[in-house]
Length: 74
Image 1 (spheres, one colour):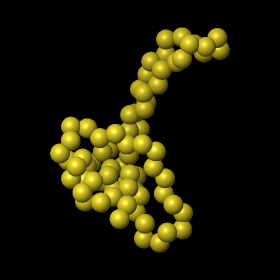
Image 2: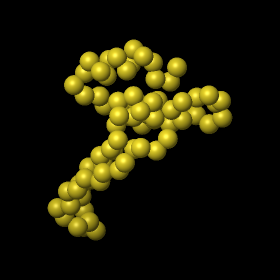
Image 3: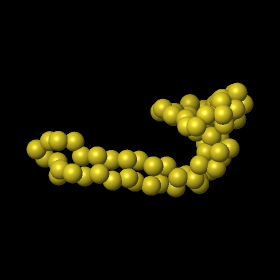
């Protein structure tokens, strides 16, 4: 089971959840991506990607933005 009920229950009890990198293994029939299951179960319709410029001579200083992506695919 790629997204166990116990994991979902723990997330429901928490104030927040931190998700690391997730990949879907190729060629496994019937496999459901845990990230897709999480998005559907908790109605996570947006993905926020904060971006800051780091000090470097070739970078424009002071960039601080958030990219908002929709997660309604699937």
